[in-house]
Image (tube, rainbow, N blue to C red; front, side):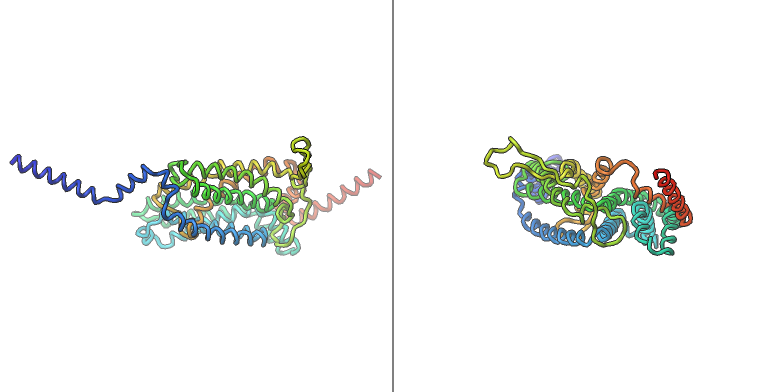
Length: 425
């Protein structure tokens, strides 16, 4: 009996070893761990992936340039479309078809909250531009002014309507799923609108403050991919195994240099530097301001006597561009690392498949959202004048006073102006 038992143990262990030999994935995994740095360079499919990614990138850059040429309003429309695609991809992460069959109309509730948040966000950011667009039509002006005045109340009422709708749709066997979706929806709205709304604010402050930060993220992404593709051997972070130190450092240097050069090029076009104060699409002309006026710097003893250039012409905004480039190269990539960790938590490769070679829209916007917030805060802190401006006072008047009150204010200002003229004469 003992001999039978031992023989059966031996045969069982033999079968176990035989089964282990039939697992090629384990050997591959071990090989990857051993030769991981080398595989970053010698991946068989990487050239095919690079071609697909390059093709998509060229199309995206071409379409982006066309939209920028069309103007501020079209860029805002592009941002809205991107937000819709991002929300769709994020909504789908926690969806369960078995649960949704029992909840007809529940998906519509998510979009109700989405468009309510859109109305609140853009109503706050673009009220001045909207009012300036309709000032020529008295009736339309009164309607728009009223909507802006009560915009917060309207948005709150829409939100409460969605809240009541959610409570009325609760079902006994799906409580946990419904509350999870409710919390997830609010997290998506915070992620998408709290950050991308700053993008729209940057657009209307002057396309320069939207285009330069966005371009730096694109340059950083492309440079990191190329440096990592050809030179990458040292893994950077476990969350993104394909990211390398060589790609990170090469992209950082490239991005900072590009920031300094691009600021000089973009800062010479009024179409990019002038703020848009309405929602029209006409050509812009304005005083460029001190940030975009060329300054001459003498090279003096810094260059040899036979050197052809004795001075350089720079824009003051170029020094601020270095700060944007530094942030885009060192801090903004952590938005991508956050997204990588997020995808690992949900065990997915990409948020979607709408862009061949890149994944979903959210996969391309992770760093852009971080950069947009920094660009807005930096502009408001170091670039925008801190004192009260005529535009700001007019915005408050148009937002908070009725047409009759504005007319009365106009008459009072006229009388004060005439009295001061008499006193001076």
